Length: 107
Image (cartoon, rainbow, N blue to C red; front, top):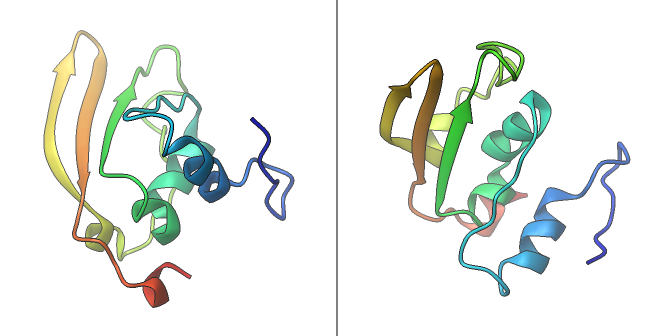
């Protein structure tokens, strides 16, 4: 599967989600703070994702700074917390997308 790069040379997340979406019901995206933050903060990604299960393993994955700051103040417009729990030393949070936004809000 080939997708375009964004302006920084990283995988274009929207293009990747568009390419994978028709093929799979569930996609695991493994990465660190940059990719987690990019997904959660992107209005265009939010319209393509119904649910996020975020696992933060502080011993292996950069501590509790797994999401880069600052996240946009409007983040609550995109996601609502479904559940969160601590399993061992890890934190598992499930986020559900709020109602789909209009095209103008995602661009």
